[in-house]
Image (cartoon, rainbow, N blue to C red; front, side):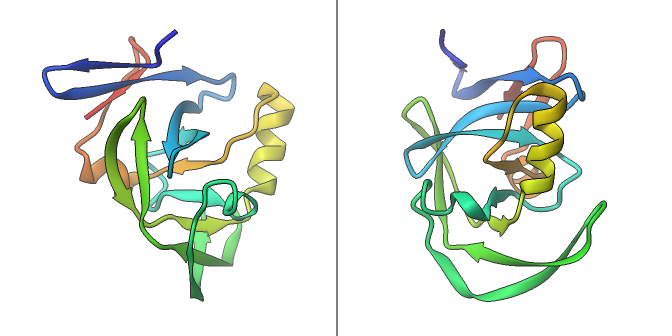
Length: 141
């Protein structure tokens, strides 16, 4: 089953609602399929640092200090621009923060038996003027 629809030059990506009320979608990063939370409350899009090789990411040598909703301050690396695509349509090139998502995946695995590769955050959603349709469970831009 296709997980996207093209409508008048718009891209609609099928999303999935988890028991935790998180929304996920399937996208490709550098041609590799992955599962991502759609989270407008996350300032930056992120990929699990343990998946940097899976997605063929190059990272900058410098690390940064960041803060999250629950973790306080932690160190992150930043990827060089990576190609986001869906069903062979290139969508955007974006730098991702590379963070340890072990605790996030542990919680999601306990409640929904799922793990994610990353998060599509507000940086991507705002840049693409994305809309989430909660009735249709789609992400469009």
